[in-house]
Length: 182
Ligand SMILES: [Zn+2]
Image 1 (cartoon, rainbow, N blue to C red):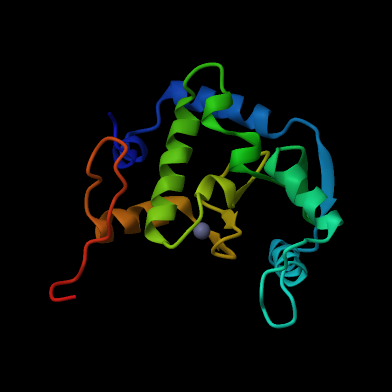
Image 2 (image 1 turned 120 degrees about the horizontal axis):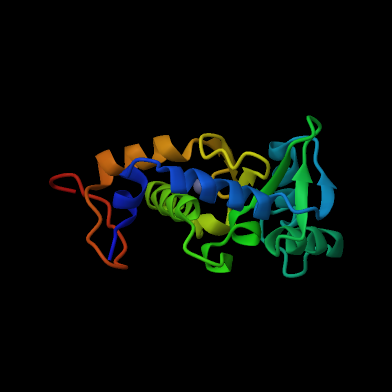
């Protein structure tokens, strides 16, 4: 069993470049647009709509929001920013299990998502919170709806590697290294 860090530390091969193009074509299939002024404002509005004035989560979300979030989650919509860029959720549009063969680029991406999630816990599954630009799938600039911030998945992976220690192997989850005496 290969650990996630072994996957993202491996050099990029020509085969992986070709797999990346295949993943981009999966990500960029035409679907409906959801216009957003900015990534930050869209998710700020979403947060405001799903909480009551006391900051408690609503039991029932406004239906327009459920529609949009559902479309994003199922890969049936992009968030389109004013610069024309289109953003997709990793889980909606480019899940590993949807590829006909094991796609090396998606294997790397999903290893990086695991590192992001490990570094920034508590965190929901990063597959369901990280938006990538559909046309480039640039891992150096993604938006995480859980962190509510732009992130560089490579930098996060390197930091996780420095601060959390090695993956235990297999499917085991990596535990943070506790400081002495904590
Ligand atoms: Zn995050």
